Image (cartoon, rainbow, N blue to C red; front, side, top):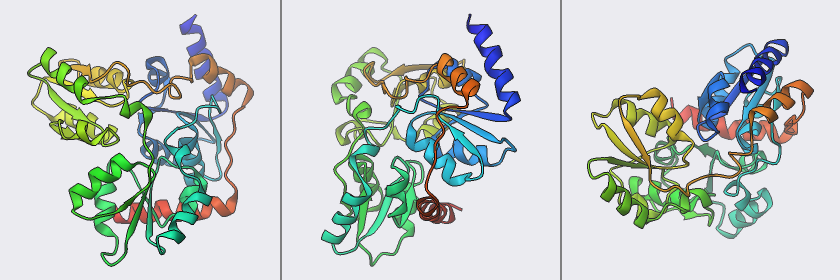
Length: 303
């Protein structure tokens, strides 16, 4: 059955001149059929470099929006439109503008894990991988409001040595990873290197040997001389880590680190999406242009 549906997906992909993107947290069979697997911004940029007419984003909704912002002339589909992000939902454009006014017009740095509307009222975007570089690159004489992940903001603030106003948002999945989980994982695997995502709680981040984005975790696993790793992020990444590093061993910091939204997309939903061309993601032009400007400012800092 699985082989048949995969064949149908590949046939429809060719028919529609589509490219399939899968986030690192997707279920294994979705990762395996994708043209590219990676983090949200990385995937959107890779899709923009192809000649695909259709982008199918297997991830959560804000990621598909980012693909549309970067490739406005392409059709962007998401196989499960209900796949949202609780972190992105913690901030709205209206609430952000109100907070900005209250704080006396600080410079707004928004994590890419936000809606297009929030990006559109931000000064510059960042990813978990380049947030430190972005904060270091903005004017020293401006106060900063960092949205929406307070854990990422706290970690960046400590790395840069610069105080920031932090939005009170967080990722429920990463918050399920507790210090006691790290302690237990270290007890079970005493020689393993602990690598965690900066969306984790500060007390967890303090216990890690390394802190990195999903792309950074993949790079550390590939380049490190260590043979065993305890991974503190959404457990979907373990599939790719094991596939790319068959000679090394990986353990999850917590079995509860599962994002239910990331697990909503299945091969069946991907097939239905391509068969019916459903789940189209649109972004109004005026919002798209302002959001794109915030993303391009980040990319300028990052080059």
